[in-house]
Picture 1 (cartoon, one colour):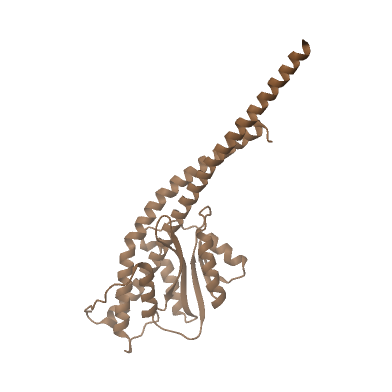
Picture 2 (cartoon, rainbow, N blue to C red):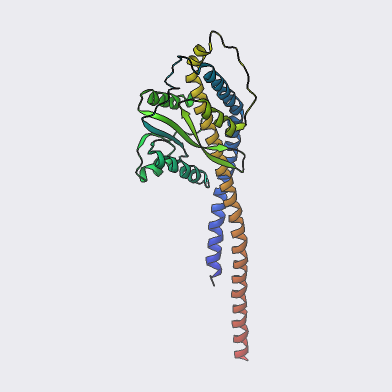
Amino acid sequence: MPTSRAVKKRIRATKNISQITKAMEAVSAVKMRKSQDFALRSRPYALAALRILGNLSDKVSGTDFYSSLLEKREAGKTCLVIVTSDKGLCGAFNGNVLRKAAELARESDAEIIAIGKKGVDFFKKRGFKVIKEITGVGDYGAIDETKFLADLLKEIYESGEYKEIYAAYTNFLSVMKQEPQVEKILPFDSESIKKTVSLRGGAEGVRDYVFEPSAAEVLQELLPMLLEIQVYHIILEANASEHSARMLAMKNASDNAEELIDTLTLAYNKARQGQITKELTEITAGVAAME
């Protein structure tokens, strides 16, 4: 049985850890509320943009309209954008999305654009080709902060080297639930757009828009903007998921620390009681021997 001094030392160490996890929980709660607000406010906008894109794509289908962002290719490589965190201590957040991404990467022999240090380390250690590393960028609050990524995806797709670009990220459903997801980003096509709309928020009735000067000209102008919106939304969903997962992980750690402190306190009291009983027995025996 451990001594009371050893148990007391463990109690002190556990209390110190508990203070750290509670502080991290509080910080994550603030960040989670902010990132959740960004994600939820952007969601209707992103879905509306996808629906407009789907409508425009249908209107120009069968015409001689051309855009590199709509071009379907039979040959070429697959690119996978994986969104993870730079830091750990966020439960299964990184593990879940990395498993899903690795499955697609193996099947399609994809080249990786890794956002977040955890994703960079994961794919490099397993021998995947990481063509771009993006780390240390923190949280994104404005669409201008993610424009560089949309521009990068547009550039590498227009190079003709890749036939498809996918994104693996964590979709924010609630504070308690986040779901890893893989979506096709490029090329834009009606089927993948409908699938994404359904996954993100459910289908809506078809609307017939009137486009001026023409659907083709509007689509040509909007395509890069719509790509920026989709990339921005993916990053916001991942941010909200990360902070929610970290807050829950730190809350669970704090709760476990409190339970451990209670258990250790009971063990300390028992050890102390045993020590006192032993001392009293020795004193009693000593007194009896002197009589």
